[in-house]
Image (cartoon, rainbow, N blue to C red; front, side):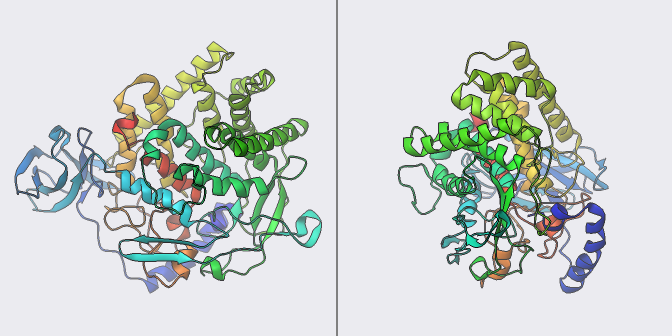
Length: 560
């Protein structure tokens, strides 16, 4: 993931992109213009807010039920206003007052132009998108054959990267370590501990917040670990690979990678030599956090595995305590994703999860010192700053001994962050919770904001936060400048040409389903459905992990 951006600076990327974009424009016809009506192409939940953005239209609109042709709602478009980041005059068609109509297919019609768009209303609306996004993690599996069906198309690849990985950079040239398994990181086939930690941490947060609703969804993945719920079985596939990345002293290797990004070929045809990259403190901290989480989450299902995870967390935590300074992985021989950022956020998250699992009072002292130094909850975060995961674990802990004033401070900062997200959504012509920020992978951030919003909803019960979560999903599924879904195989006009070696390299024309693409970058209008356009159309596990959380939050009414 993040091929060149992760390795080089923005300036070099800009030089590189000119030729890529020009080539794509020469080789591929322009996309058709978007429809005037832009809404969630999957549909809406009954009893929840329902609205569409409409470009260059005024006057009346109707909602018609397709089953019998009945007009179930008539309203007036809001006065148009300029949407600053897209430069469009947008009106809003708000049909929330429909309330809880019968489940089924409906149609929104703008009277003046007779333009119309179909949508669905159903209580189980997000069940299938959630299943597809979560099953997509299985389809990302490395070191094993995978297969799946979607829309009448069969997807599969054989065992891949079975010789992971050479230990040349650990002082053992020609020797191979036992690092098979795990998930491919993104549109590339490498495996990065920091991004894996960020993804697993977010998916664990989904399980802790919405576990019963998640467990009720059949994920259609092979039963590799029968004693576990499907969701946790899939996470265990990644955890087993992560455990293989821990050295005997507790340090954790940074990544498994080829020296350069490989060609656009199927994973089981990729034969580039892959190497283990030496340890980093960020990888070690993120490993500690995920293993501590796993120790408590898997305990009711598999005590032996939970104990192994706890032992791994203890060894890496002890290593971090003995090595308090930041240590950056040596990667000068590699042109693949660096995944380097300062490790203070990773250490805070590690301390929070380790304390929540063990209750160690010394760890609580360390954690609260770290929180005192940085207690603000971020509205815009990803793998490079994971402290929000740690802050939420601390805030919602039921353990005794926390500093009440510090808890209140974190709670206040959480609400402030959630209010900022809500305000951005309410000010935007497409109700986009990230407002006018666009960058590499910003669709992942739109989904990830659901974590902060749902935390605020849990504390306050104020549905404004749940509504903003839905605004994010609406944006990702079609209420956007392009009027189309950003998730392969989901909704109307989804991406057909993601930057994904598996989709490009296999014999099937359709893209592998359930993957969230990165989104507009660096402008709101700058996204193309082109395989070559990795800056806007790549896929990545951390973006899917965030999407899985957002979708899980709506499996039950408003995440309850």
